Length: 294
Image (cartoon, rainbow, N blue to C red):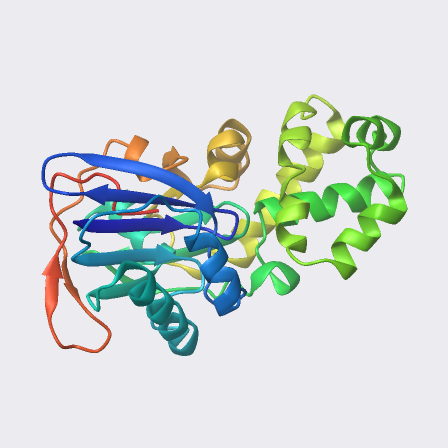
C-alpha cells in the first residue's frame, strides 16, 4: 500500500492506494520545522489503522531539502508509525508545482495557513523566494490575514470589533493570551479567515484583504520572471479566489488555476520517479492517484 500525504500547518490529507482503490482521511497538520517529534506522533495517532504499507510519500510544510534535519525527524516518525523505511519527505511547494504545472513552466503558489511560491519548470523548482514563516513573512496567507484583521479592529481601522468579539466569544485579553502564551498561534490567527471572508462587503475588510494579497505579490511574485502564468492552491486562495484574481490581475499578473486541492483541479500528475533521501532505492507514484500533491 502506498500512502501519500499532503500537509500544511493546519491540516493534512492522507491518501492510501492499495492498487484497487484509494481512500483518504484528514488529520491535524504536520509542519516538520515547527512541530516536535511528540506533536508529530500526536497527529499520526489520529490516523486509522492501515494494512501493510510499502511506501510513504509526504509533501509537507517544512519538509524537503531546505530543512534536512526537520525532514529527517519527520522521516523517522513516519517510518516508526508505518513500519517501512521507504519514506520520502518533500516540501508541499514541490507538490504544488507538479500539480499545477506538471512538466510545464510557471509560478506555483500556496496560500493556506501560510504562503509560499516558486518558479518551476519540468516538475522541478528553479527558484523559491523564502516564505520566512508566519512571524517574518507568509504574506497573503491565513495568518497574515488574521493578524492584519485583529490589528485593524483593535486599532480602530476596521469597524467590526464588537461584532467579531460577540461572534467568536473571545475577549481582547484572551486573544493576546492565545497569540503570545499558547502553542499554535498560527492556527489560531488563521481560524478567523471565515469571518473575514463573510465580511468582505465591508470596504475596510476588502481593502485589508487586497493589501495582503498585494504584499504577497510585491514581496514574492515580483522576484520571479514576469509574464509566466501564476497558479494557486490552498484554502485561502480558493475561498478568496475572486478577490485574489482581481487584485493580482490589476497588477498585471496572468492568473491561471486557483484550487483548494490539486485533487479538485483539472491536471494530470505524471509518474514521478522519486529518490529517497538516503538514496538507497527509488519508487514511482502511480498514475491512478490524483492526490499526490498539495
